[in-house]
Every structure is written in structure tokens, then in C-alpha cells.
Image (tube, rainbow, N blue to C red; front, side, top):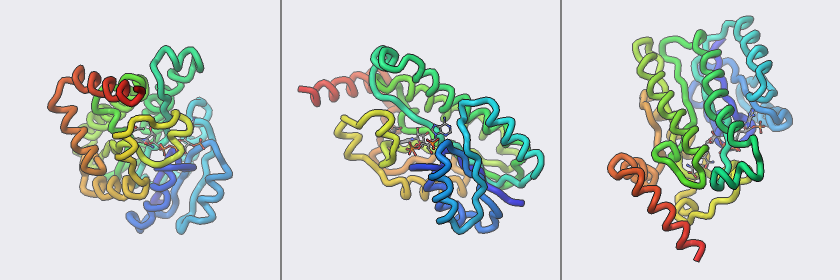
Length: 259
Ligand SMILES: NC(=O)C1=CN([C@@H]2O[C@H](COP(=O)(O)OP(=O)(O)OC[C@H]3O[C@@H](n4cnc5c(N)ncnc54)[C@H](OP(=O)(O)O)[C@@H]3O)[C@@H](O)[C@H]2O)C=CC1
Ligand SMILES: CC(=O)[C@H](N)C(=O)O
């Protein structure tokens, strides 16, 4: 049985992967979808042209992995595509967030980094030549971001992990692509807090476009997928300029906005 696995499938970018995957991978038999909100996954299942198998659960809970591993062991599927999209962010300084929600920043690290790694490790034995991994990082991975510090650090981990793992798996014909979008119009900002940066607001992308580009880039075997010219410029800027300067520019533009 040929399958794809998508985490964060109940909303936004992950959900869009579930919608587009059947058109890119016509030989898939099933997509296994992971998220906490079962009702959302049930709706997606009714609308999908491929059978979806629902794995309702919290990626922060250990028993979730035991359950998934048991299913993988029993079915021994040919995993053609793993998409790690589950994640969240919180806006504000590290101290402000810590005061309001003491454990949320370590939970962010646990979901964005640890859970992504755990799912990948569980899936590795079922990948074979031609299989793909897509890890949803972010343009926030390119440089540190004051007032988004933990989030940006988690996404640097995802980018670095994807590049390292990709180099290890290349010889087996398995490609890993880190997707690094700027702001995307999803429920992300309901949880993180609204975007106040006008440059970021102007660069807001549609999830359909980001996902289509990611799937095309993954098919080509690209290691990083960046949608839109402004975000490619940001990627280039982060390579050319010292991160100290980039952070200063970000802080100045935020202060100007507040005036
Ligand atoms: N939107 C943006 O501007 C950008 C987003 N990204 C990244 O894209 C990824 C997807 O975000 P996006 O689609 O925008 O945001 P959404 O909030 O729309 O989706 C987040 C997804 O993660 C799932 N999720 C969250 N917490 C858990 C958990 N503990 N266990 C299982 N699943 C969980 C949610 O499902 P449920 O709540 O049902 O469990 C949901 O399906 C994230 O990694 C984000 O960092 C990257 C760049 C830009
Ligand atoms: C939420 C994101 O990851 C986005 N790249 C941003 O920095 O706003």
C-alpha cells in the first residue's frame, strides 16, 4: 500500500497538502492525516478524492507515537511522502510570553522540533527510493527574530535538520525539502497573535500557492522551497548581511510603526 502522512492536516498549510497531494501523486492509496481536531479531519475526509485514515491525537503526548508506530508496523506501508506541517508560534518578547503563558514556549520547541523529529524517526524505515519528506520550516529560519525569538529558533532547527537529513538520505534516492514561507493566510495568526509588521502583511501568501510550489520543488528534489520574490529577497539578505543588522532593522521598523 502506497501512502502519504501529513501532520497538521486539520488546518492551513497541512490541510492544503492533503488537498493537493492526490494530484501530484496519482499512485497513492491512502493519506494518513494527523491532528487533534477530529471534526476537521472528518470533513476533510468527506471532501477528499483519496481515502484518508484519521489519526486524532496530540503530538505532545508520548502515547500518540506508540499508536502510530503500531499501525506502521502492522500495515508496513510504502511511505511515498511525509509532510511535517504541525506547528505554532507566539508573538512577543520571551519575557512577555513567559509571564502570560509560562510553559508555552517550551511546548513550542516540543511541537515544532521534537515532535517533527519523532514523527520523522518513526517514518524513516518505511521510506524508499523516490520517497519524499517535506518539513514546513519558515522564512523565520533565516535569521533570529526579536519578539518571535523562540519560534524563529525552532524553525532554524527545522531547516538545519532537513538539510542534514537530506544529505544523509540522498544516496538512497530520498529527498528532503524544507519549506520556508513568509506569512501565509491561515489560522496560525489567531494563535500567535496578529501580524503588526506592515511589510509582513504586504507579503502575505495564499496556502494553495505555497503548497503547490513546495510540491513542485520537492518533485525536483530541491532542498529548500521559498515562495514569492520578497521572501527570496529576505533569504538572500539573511545570507549577505550580518544578522545583528537585520535584527536592528526589524526593531527600528517596529518602533516606527508604534509612533
Ligand atoms: N501561516 C504562516 O504564516 C506560516 C506558517 N508556517 C508553519 O506552517 C506550519 C503550519 O501552520 P499553519 O497551517 O499556518 O497554521 P494552522 O494553525 O492553520 O495549522 C496548524 C496545524 O498544526 C496542528 N497542531 C497544532 N498543535 C498540535 C498538536 N499539539 N498536536 C497535533 N497537531 C497539532 C493543528 O491541528 P489541531 O489544532 O487540530 O491539532 C493544525 O492542523 C507550522 O509549522 C507553521 O510554523 C511557516 C511559515 C509561515
Ligand atoms: C509565521 C511565519 O513563520 C512567517 N514566516 C513570519 O515570520 O511571519
